[in-house]
Amino acid sequence: MASVRVFVPTPGSRFARIVRPGSAVVSADGPAAELLRVDFEGGSQASNIATFADRCHHAAGRHLTNYPTAARSLAPLPQLVQIGSYDDESGEVSLDNDDARAALAAWLRTDTLERELLTEGTARHMMRREVIELRTRGDFAQARWLARHYHLDELA
Image (cartoon, rainbow, N blue to C red):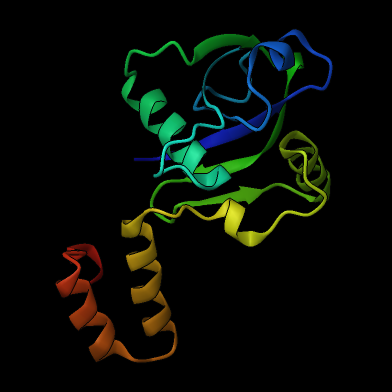
């Protein structure tokens, strides 16, 4: 999967009223588009959706495969604020700047954004981060063994 742009609704906009607060809103449409096709994932109680990055993962998966869903809409660009991007390979949301961090915190109705909210909690991404951490520490043999054990052939 690729990277997608992540948005929050502009406060007070029509789009903000139709999307559940705290939802991840993503689009792969180009920056010049005035009307964006967006997919969103709300605050589901599903056990595999614990973080904002998890919501981005599910919305991006549907968006990029054009999977049929009711959680898709066309949104005029003025009704959205781009806050960053979601990269499926790393499972992380990268925020553009401090204003984006503040906009996301307000959308999530929290005073502080913990790093864990921006990191996907799926087992595959946690395993990938573990292998990468071992490589970073210079423990290449252990990283290679673990990558093979986890069937992460691209990291072996």
